[in-house]
Length: 309
Image (cartoon, rainbow, N blue to C red; front, side):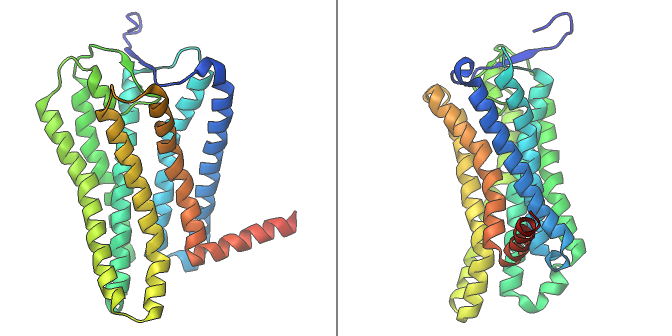
C-alpha cells in the first residue's frame, strides 16, 4: 500500500521463472496478441465490407469476434508490461476494473452464443417466419443486451467489492479474477448470493438455452432431407465448437479458483495461459474455415494478396 499516493497495490504472484524466461514469455504472448487482433479484425472487416454477409448469423459472429478482441485487450497489454517489469503489481482499482471487464465479456460470450443458437433455431425450424422474426432491429437489440446485461450485473458486484477491506495483497495469478475474494478480511453473504445469481443469469441460463435450442434443431434435422442436414451441420457445428471450447475454459477458471491450494503453480500458470489464448485464437479460425460464405471471401482476399505480392 502506497500511503503517499493513497493507492493500494496487489502483487501478482502467478508467474513462473519470470526472471529466466521474461523475454520468451513477452515475444510469445506479443505474437499471440497480434495474431488475435489481426485474425479477428480480418473476419470482422469481411463481414462489414461484403453485403451478402449482412445477415443476422454473420452480424452475431462479428459481435463474438469483437468480444474476443476486447477480452484480449483487457489482459494482454498489462500482461506484456508485467513480463518486462521487475515487480508484477497492479493497483486495487485497476484490478477491480480488469475483473469487471473480464467477467462482463465472458458473460457476453455466452449470451452472444445463445443469440446465435436462437438465430439458427428460427432459420432451421421456422424458415418461413425467419425474415419476420429476425429483423435487423431484433438483431441489434439482442446484440445490445448481450453486452448490457453482463455489464449491469458485474458493476453491482465490483462496486460492492470495492468497499470491502483487504487483509492480503498477494494474488495467486497473472491477472485479476475472482480469486481476489481470498484477499478480503471478511466476505459479504449478500455479494456471494448476488455472484451466484450473476453466474446463473449470464452463464448457466444461456448455456441451457443453447443446449435446448440445439436439441430442438437436431430433432427437426433428423426428420429432414440430406440437404437440410448438410446446411444445419455447416452453420451449427462452428457455434457448438466455440461453445464447448469456451465452456471448458470457464470451467478451468472456476476449478483454479476453487482449488486454490491444491493446484501447483506451474499447472495454474499453463492453464491460465491456455484460457486467454485458445478461445480468441480459435474463434476466427473456426468461423473463417467452417462458415462457407466467410471462407469464400477469405480465400479471395488471401489469393488477391498473394497475386499482388
